[in-house]
Length: 184
Image (cartoon, rainbow, N blue to C red; front, top):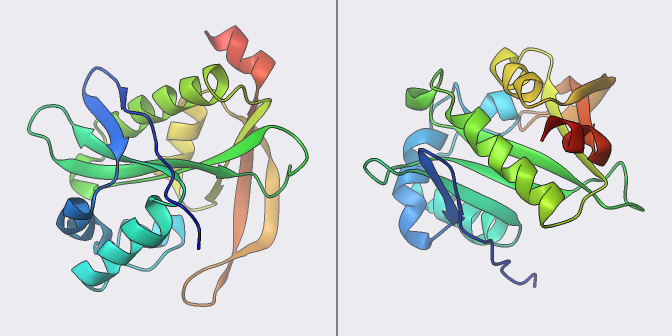
């Protein structure tokens, strides 16, 4: 049984990135049930609060995943995390992934959260590479990735099986430590 991972609290101008709590299940369900959110990231919309509780317990708390909370009002509006990079297992590399409530799209929140996690990844975890993948059709995610300064590496064809069994292409991006240092 995997242990829970403690994530440090991180802040930006408008956001708090913090540890997920069981109390966050209703907020997660509220945005994760939306058919425009999960399928863009490859996962099915949550069916009920019990499923959201399970995701918090078995996925978010056992991996380096933060709840994204708005400072104004305290609403949990998304998630962002770092997990092992399965393409670069022999070096200090992680893969970043995220999701955001549709009601908060087009406000710059995900770019703001991603830039803070990128800083943490390189400054605190001392990574050599940070990578991120997204689907060809996920234009919103691609814009965040490009705004953050990642470099497009290429597209893997039929590289990801969706929750419904369909195969999709995956666009791969990365940021090297020296690229991060130049951006600072």
